[in-house]
Image (cartoon, rainbow, N blue to C red; front, top):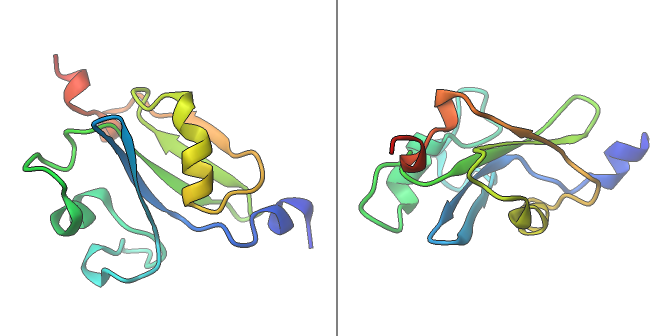
Length: 118
């Protein structure tokens, strides 16, 4: 087994938001099947928000991101530039990441939040 596969053996894909300065993380466990992505191995932000939203705001109001695992078992975190690096330890813990993830700040409209609309 390769080192990265061993490091992230218990890692999970999933999505997260930063809501009022706190990480709101949802590692994929299939518990909310209505929120499952077409691929069947993770959640979508929009579908999941309808089941977990802590406030009466749209799913794209808060900064958000996603944890993926590539074919080599490496963790890749895609996230809004409004999610600070200070959240990386909490993200790693929430998704069971033991190795150093690749972090990709996504400046596209896909990860825009209310902070991008001002």
